View 1 (cartoon, rainbow, N blue to C red):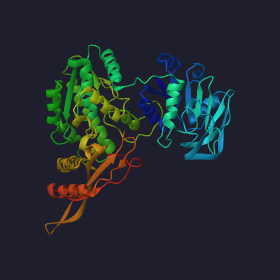
View 2: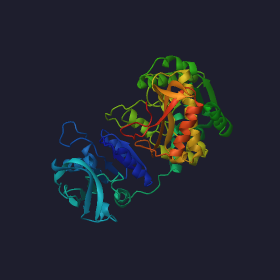
View 3: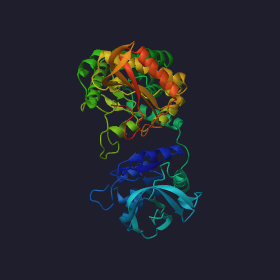
View 4: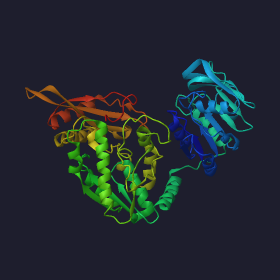
Length: 509
């Protein structure tokens, strides 16, 4: 196992992804982690991440410096390298020339981290500080034009530093460098697989749940479906899945869930019709955060009421993923700006009676799909596009009403149908329709109309952390537009969203 200390870099999750891609398990922990906890998990190696702070600033993040005396190999990246140098007797100062973006790395020692790496290779820099004095026993192993100490090492103590970011795709040989650290320095084995994850997670679930019962909110999406099958594999009859019809779902969602999980997987599923309980408090609400909070709180109330009917129910399971946590709050104890509250992690009452159990909370979406395949879920569920917890409420900009829900539901069905027919569905991360709170003038049947505008959104991504708008074939867009305008009453204009994430989010609210 590799331990990653989070100093606040925007690339922390990429470090974890690269380590896992190399089939080594890793955990991300805050800088405040106790030394005893580090010793108890006994990592084969420690990676100190980058971060936005300067090492000499007051309040800059710190980890217990005694980690350098544990005899565990350590790799510092960007701020992590500066922290290593600063705490071992070296000196870090504001650089005469800052370095951001692509740089040419010149390797001076082709051993250690650079075994098998080209002597001249691109790397991605992002720093305004540099090492001006190395600690005793360290040497420079790579440089760039602006940064003499672009990589350093003390091979005797197994301490390494990279001023650049090996985890990003802009450092094409960065994965090789990380591989050299994991296997050449730390002696890790390639034993992190989804089969191993299933075994470990089942053991942990059984240990935590014991003889108690678990309730899961089953939506029919990838995350909750994989969670349901994993829990069912671990605790069988102790699991009760509750499908809440909040009136904000896709067409025939309830029937699909019953058919798949009741009939195929033989899981206990309870259907709850709670449409009025969600739609009534949403009346007149326009603010997207208020919508999410209302839906989240109502969702939990429905669950708590249903849980009261199930003797021995102590746990509420959720299909929370890493990106959900990242965008809602820092999962590692540090400060972060709230972009939007996620249904799984936002709106939870402070005194919720049920304890949360989130078996997927450290997985990315692509990992969840691999897990789903291992568990035997059908492909139409595994590769289903993400659907937001608050449902169509966040795809209706402005007030949610029965009429507006009907419009967006029909439009969304057409988008999905045409994209599947064109063989684009599996190539996209997500595609859907949005209803704007605007009307525009049109001409239909030689008569003036003043009706709604629908926006089509389609993006490509690997984990939803970033996304690029999809260049869909023009004939496909023509078919979607024609069908929506002709088949959905109340719509006379269709537009296409060509913004990427960042700066935009994938969902509009």
